[in-house]
Image (tube, rainbow, N blue to C red; front, top):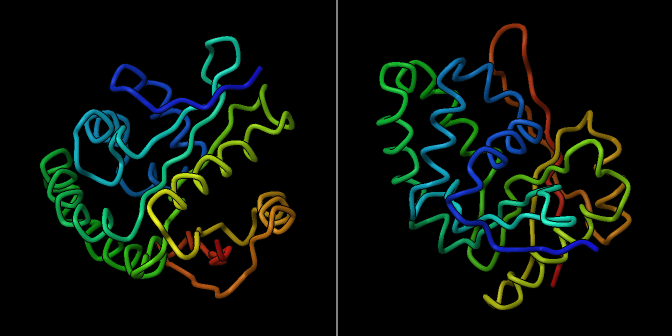
Length: 197
């Protein structure tokens, strides 16, 4: 039996692990400071990585997956505070990667009025193919409807063909494409996908 539950600050360890499954490039950006930063952000209110925006899936009380999502109002209200908290956690590392973070914020995670954004979704490997991802997405869609959002949007890496196929199957359509250069060796390409509610 799969249940979807609102996160609490006690679940930070699972949050960090699942977040890094969904966005492993964070290690490239922040190195050893990645996990402590994510842990602190998760436990802090009013930022885009806060437990306030997270739902966990559970099977027999074991966390199996996670989704982070929020609406355009939260994005506008918490974007700067999230940057400030990252600076506080990362110090000089934040300053070094600031140009990349600004580009990332302009390409991936862009949310306009009326939109609800799925930031990250991940399921632990042993629990995949059980329908957990679909239930997490449907929970986000439910939250989006409660907030009277007009559409739900997400960004998915172009190479993640399994996820793209999954999103298409549940009604999402590709609307645009973007590329971000993390370093000379690492480029990320994303599809923006959306579903009208």
